[in-house]
Length: 254
Image 1 (cartoon, rainbow, N blue to C red):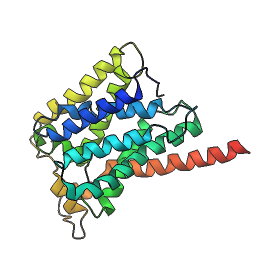
Image 2: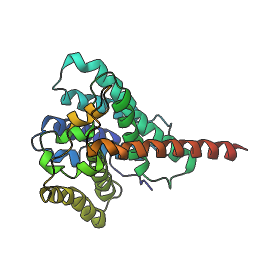
Image 3: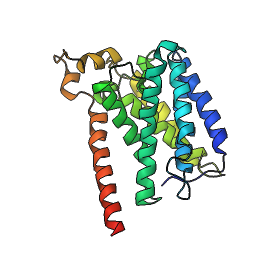
């Protein structure tokens, strides 16, 4: 269950936009990737029942747009595509808000990550323009993500989402710091990096992923047998969540 925090939405927006933008601008040492997304999660959690479903989502849209623009090194030629993908990724926040308002406050904040990964998968398969995947934050640190030979390239996106969700639960939900979640957050960050250094495998690269999902895929690899099964699975899960929510809303109205 997502809990409201006492931090003002404007502060969450400013902090999230700054930290997430810096994460994109510092690919050689992307530690901010583990904390920069958490304020946006808090904004979504703060959108409570008494407010419009769209409340504060314009701030998420603006924050993501600025951050992705920073990720493009402020290239004006990519501005239109950045705005389009920022809108699509904001839809994951809208999906979470819709589900929570329909099913009640007990809906897990993990639902947001499910919808985000679904958007990544949809853009991977059908986007005609370059996309900013969360996994791209680690383009220059493949030695941190050698384990993604098993999870796929976008398994790294899930890593970013999990760490930020745990950070949100640790310090952005209540006045007191939740030390259990602090420890879980630290383990979620350090554990995969340490494990990666113990492996002799080479990380799945963005180029390999894009080649696999191109019109002429390279299917002569172990990775090709699995593909991006994490976002593919979350896509089906998100469909089931939305169908269940719609059915629940319809039966409740009766």
